[in-house]
Amino acid sequence: MGMDLIPKCLFTGDFNVGRKLRILGKLIMFLSVLIFCLWFVNGLFIPKYYYNEVYSTTNTYKDFYKLQKNSVDVLFFGSSHAACAFNPQVIYDKYGITSYNLASEQQSLVVTYYWLEEALKYQSPKVVILDTYTFHYYFDAYVYNDMNCSEGAVRKAMDFMRLSPTKVEAAVDIERIDPTQDKWSILFPIIRYHTRWANLDEEDYVCDSMVEHGAIKGYALVGDKKPGASTVTFKASDVDGIEEEPMVKIADEYLDRIVNCCRKKGIELVFTNIPCAEPISRYKATKCYADENGIPFYDFNEESLYNKIDYDVEENAYGHPNYLGAEKISSYLGEVLARDYGIKPRIDNSYELSGKNYDHKVKNILIDQTEDVYDFLEMINDTNYSIFIFAPTDYRNSIDEKALALMQKLGVTDNLLENEVGVHYCFVKDANRVVIEKETYDDFSFSGSIRGGLATYSFTIDTTNLDERYRKYSMIVDGKECGTPKQGIDIVVYDNEYSQIVSEINIDKGNNSIDITRY
Image (cartoon, rainbow, N blue to C red; front, side, top):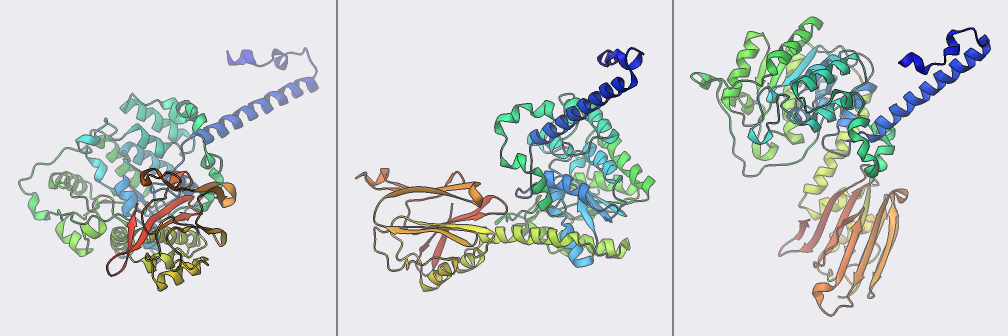
């Protein structure tokens, strides 16, 4: 049938050679344009998860392809636990060891295996570290199917794998294990995402620049703490008499394939399990498999190892360690890699960019967590941020001289301590440029934009209604209402580089200090 589409004159003597070549050239050009259009549309319609999100899987996999060939000595795989726990930046900064984190949310062992195969086309790691959380079924609320993950989790990991025989084989296996998924739409995502045309936004059209920005070598940085959480550990000696919890069905095939792949390539395989309060029955099953296959297993839920890294569940969190917990886990593994596997330090200039990205994300977390208004005002005095200040009602007693001085460093010229009740105040600073500073008794409504028109804002004060409940005090930043009728001063911090609001607070004097209220 396919041959019928090609003009028969190409195979007969009816036309001269020149005519045949022109037709052939047009056909080749048509097919080239068609392939390019399909490639472009596929890329455009795939959902994106960039560096400005916690799980920046678009950056994770596209950044990987940008790495210099054979520049990585350690690869990490696993679920979101692994994505949050293994920080290549910390390992490089402390030990000079180059690594990359290829973990993703709910990463099935099927996906792990095929991304390992894909990664080995471009890198020759000495060690592969595999988090063991997905060896067992997720707890009841998260059990999906024999893939042990959602279709969305598969997509996040597979959509940006380059089309190759590896991806074809992966797509076939995924459909075989979970018949609700379609191999053709994995290979050609436009089949799955064609309805997204109405929801395309700025980030769909700037994929190249968002990827060029880079992330943190696949690491997912979070800042959550868990005050009041209880420590749950076990002793390795407690396994006697404990019944093993069976692993997921696909472990029989795909764990063996991962093990054999590493052996064939001469790669050391290491199992880890991060602090996550996992039952000892799962530890026993994983430990038995590891011992049978001669694989080292570091389970940070085991009491002695948990204490050795000085882990604190309240400060560092379970399951998805915050960046402080990840530093502890990564530092320990870095020491193991240097000491036990002899991995030598090397110089890699790409860590300068990922280091800046790491510092930037940590600063955003600190801005949103600090309870000290002076530290807050000092940290936001940075051209990476746009600042919005809104004081619609009574705010004269909301700050002190020190806080005012710090606000003046931001560009505030009005003496907020001296304004009378009833004077409305607003202020906007776009990076290093004050856009507007307004104080007035009159109601007002106006709007503007930052980031060259890419993000909008508006202020509205309407006090004409005699009933205070229906008076309007509005500050909308990038489509989000951030204004409050509360006494005090509202401050919104917008990250220009990450295109998102970092922090929204109200400051007002308490009994002995200036209190921060977040909303």
